[in-house]
Image (spheres, rainbow over the protein chains, first blue to last red):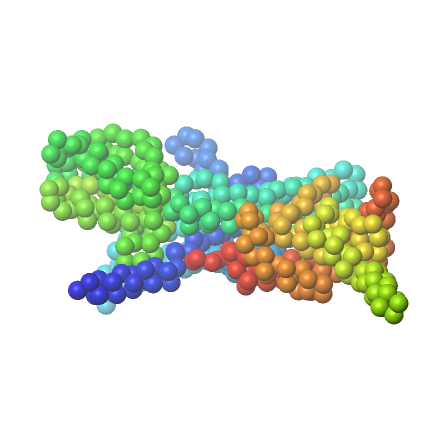
Length: 316
Length: 166
């Protein structure tokens, strides 16, 4: 019996050793400041408030320098063995998916099931967004390019790191040349920050966010202040998080009887079986815990990517 | 009498031996502590760093020879600062103690005509020579094939690749 346990333990250790963590996706996008300065924006009237949104499609169709900068960064990252998602291709993919979902019907004439939230989520996205900004200053015949490249975690909103600088004044080089030079010169500094972020992820677990909400007038008749054996549901969830995060690391952003929001939640990269884990897989463990005795709470899991998940309690 | 002459001859030969040891050994001795300075000399083309390296030695020829070795060492362990449009870079190896941990690898790597030689080239034969006290400070502009160098270090396990673990 002991021998079997030993063999199983060895296999589990080997599995985790050969497992690969879920790889985050990266995508380069022009920053809002750059889009605004260059007129690539759409202005909406949102209930009396004027709202400006960056128009990536228009920027990619009209600005050659932007295309060159994105292509150069993609090329350099692929060289480092970390190919990026291409913004233009992602936008085309979203358009195609939208067209397909509008046209596809079953043989019986039924359309594909789609909620407004499904449509809202169908956008070009990545786990880490690299925002790119540049500006050319002209002093007489001299041109200087100021360049900012900043990586941001899409789920935590945290800055992963960046690289910035100003080029040497040039009399002859055009913007494309200055921009290419800036990208080539700064990419290593950016990648050093990115590497530090990945090293931290492997050492301390993936940093994610978790939101828990409650369906209004739910059939289970519960909220986060409902009591089980003298403890409120919110406290029970806190305890579960403390036991199921790396070194019990998480922070509570805010809470009420209807919602609780956790951030800086450090989840392990692998589950007990040694399989790679993302936030959804991890949150499903909490769902299983809550659906069992003595809680018996139905839980809806809403995945928002590698680093964010929403659980809604009370119904499915 | 014969024995005494033989002893003197042998002593003289032994004393002369270091004189024929050549500049390589002298260079090795002068640079074994990797005493040098690096500064950014411009933004290199894709895959390269363009740097100016200053080496010290009592023999100016020795310092010139060792500039290449020092430049590669600097890119791996020290990095260099930038300025006036020239972008400074961090060291390829950021982990403290890596030089000691991989001592065997680096001893071979930095041996005379070792692997380091593949990643460095002198961009201009002109060098600056300054007499500082009893020794010379020699400055040269060199180009480092940093992408290839990083790949070699990744293969040796000294640094992690960006996608390792995923």
